[in-house]
Image (cartoon, rainbow, N blue to C red; front, top):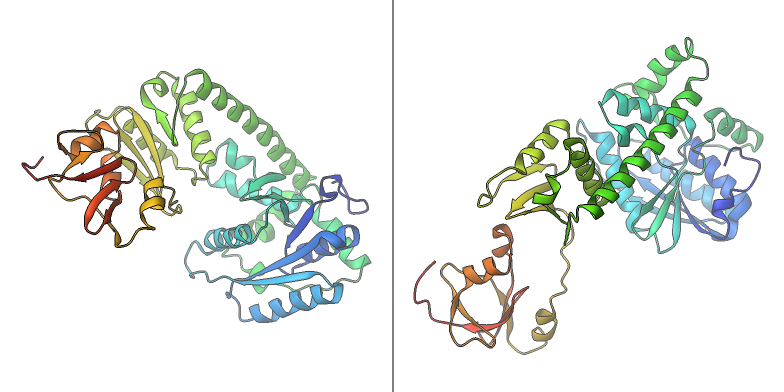
Length: 395
């Protein structure tokens, strides 16, 4: 969409949700969508509780929607007042919005061309690569729905003009003038000075972001080709190490970045990336680990394992589903030196060796569930049916 006078073809017949802060940008977005798509529209306001005015803003948003008969929902978010308050608030806000997004709904946010320019500069000063300099995409998947930015090609001046022509009111966030926040510092101090030297700075920076987005598509396409041609995907979010190290280093890094992005991992720093590269040459019998934030990468045998400590644990074991319905069902975990007899086997075996033979990494073994009925072992998660055996020796 290039202006605010026509409908956006992408939004035709879509179910729309507006992330509604009450600021001028989201007010104009909500009003614009109300004019063209009133029957398929609702709004969500995230109250971060970071300002003494936050309840007033929530009330403003509720009243605004009530006056237009727009469905409205308030979500309370509590963010710790730390040095990363902007990033933490953004993550919690999008998490809250994503889990409240219904299937096939489009989440619309009011990011515009000036926001895109600021984002590119922020990423540049952080030393980001192509993915960071591509800034904000027009469209991206978000849980069961889509995150869409209708105003990304619209300049701030057009939004202000729309608000004036339609006599709209909005709230002013007192934090928007706080230059301790880097985005505000760029917006209020740096970009105005740069604009006195470089004409059409916002358009130029937005164009740079577009070029980087196209370059990102190329690097991602190359990663897909390498993963397929080298047969790098072992399944279960594992990469094959012997085949991975056959790639040139720059293509190897590209595959890793693509893979981490597909898993929704926060991109690693250059230092962390070097640690991951070093991990690839670790001894086969070692258990090396690289970690950052809540993420871990481990090497086991000839595979790289990618672990998100905050990822929900899915309960899909068929033995659990079957046995939990029986009386006196209980769950336990393996003990040192434990021996068991697998179904169809005449002799007992060391449980440790069974787990090794099944290719289950050491760090996952202690958490595997063992299912009991009347204190008798019946089965083990990811292994199968089994029963007790005497501890004739420890391994």
